[in-house]
Length: 73
Image (cartoon, rainbow, N blue to C red; front, side):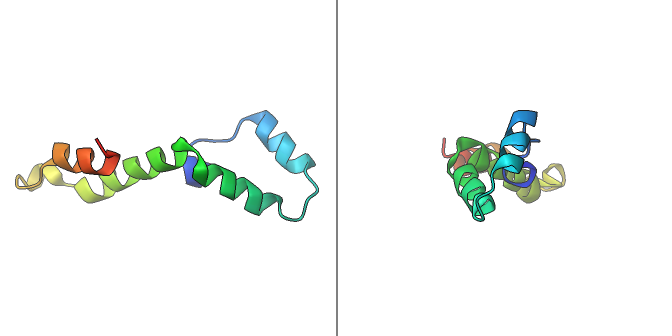
């Protein structure tokens, strides 16, 4: 969850995952997490940081426009 949403799972989520005996529990969890808004939000923040690192030294970059594009605003 940390690498897909940028947050730690709650204790009850960890317990539920550990209690699940299905062999495909990891695949099901990943499929669910990538469908949730937290996934897109986390990677929008990530790419904003990566693409705009050092933007203050490059005045031709418009951080606001890039954010609008990344976040679909």
